[in-house]
Length: 199
Length: 121
Image (tube, rainbow over all chains, first blue to last red; front, top):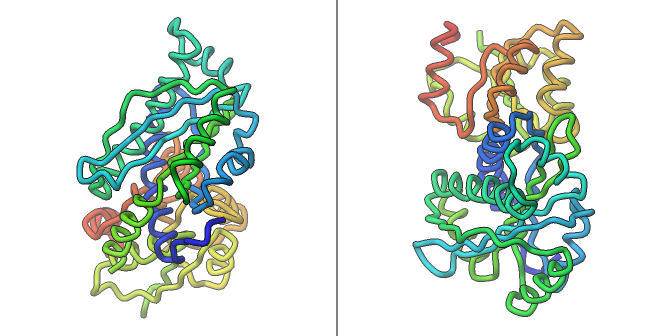
């Protein structure tokens, strides 16, 4: 845990905003694959960037071997930027291959799921919260590169606001996490936005 | 006589949004619950003749609350207010006995439309 933390009202407010955005992303996934998506409560925490790697191991998709990331930034200012990371458990890919009838490569399937979850979630944050987030194209993160990605973030960022949203599918082996990672300057900028909402 | 109204949601912000969206002239006696267990206790105590219920909650989720209400034959009218906007989620809660489903985020227009639709206000 970082020494810098949101107060309870800020955390609750952000959690509820993410809850609504998560619902839209879940619906998008459900419609795309013809499944019922089981949602859980978004987890919000601010961690010391050095602890990112160990934090990722605690998530539900901790057997993650498939991942994709998308950088995003707000058109309203460079301080509002971050990284969306989608991690999928080992069993998720075979399940996705069965569900997505078309003949895509593994990387295409993973990138597609990343886009569906991250893009929909960020679009809804824009709608709800007028954040102006715009995403770059998803990049596949090989399992051996996940550690390197964490190290790179730890070098550049001091604290990380970590939003974890877990998605499962009823009756399927799919288990995925959408993680939204925000660096220091975004943590402060978003705290101001949250205070405005709470006023 | 005031209608016992229960707002059950784990988010403080969401509970406030529902309370703020109620018609100001509606004569209700509001109780708040932060999870399904607290919500069921309040319903059993008669504090939820009318219930606004979230689905994704700790301890006991909204689906489990609806199931228990049905099993125990508790007298209440439940309107689900949730961010889970999958059509299947709506179908399930209606099957479990909810009167209606409203998408989050709630506002006074959405809430009033449902209350008027069912002659509750």
